[in-house]
Each structure stands twice: as structure tokens, then as C-alpha cells.
Image (tube, rainbow, N blue to C red):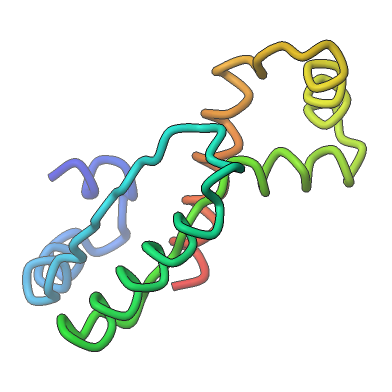
Length: 116
């Protein structure tokens, strides 16, 4: 029902029938703590094993991942307003504001959903 209110389709009945007949996407979210650079190789091995298990054993083909450090680095490279703030935080050895990280992750998730 939330999608019906949010999307406001022209033909609500057809929209609901389509939503109810399509299987719902399942999402698996794993959150690793920041600062795993010293164990990056181990972390990558675990991530690859998990990816292979999801794909081969469970048949899940649509796998996306989010690396917050990659998102932050891209913003710095783009020299965006966020990128400037992130760079200052790194230069001062301080944390990036939660609001920035949340916005970048949310935008990335929305882009992944549009592409799928």
C-alpha cells in the first residue's frame, strides 16, 4: 500500500496486480565496522566467499555492494561540496558527518534500484 501512495500510478488496480504477482526482492545487508584496512585482504576473502555462496548455492544473481570509503573517495575526486567537506575531515583526522554518509549511501541505493 505504501508503494501505491508513493508512486501514484495512473491505473492503481493494474499496479497492485503487478506488485502482487511479482516476487518480492529479498535483501541481505551486512555491515562491517569501519577501519578494516589492516585486515583488508581477509575481509575481501570473506566478501568473495559470501558472494560466491549467494550466487552459486542460493542462485541470487543481483548482488550489489556498498563501500562507504569508495563513495567518500568518489566525492573527493568529483570535488563536490560533499567531497570538500570529506577532504577536510580526512585532513583533520575527524569523522565525516553521519548526514553526509547517510545521504551518499541512500543515493547509491536509489541508483542501484533504478538500474535494476
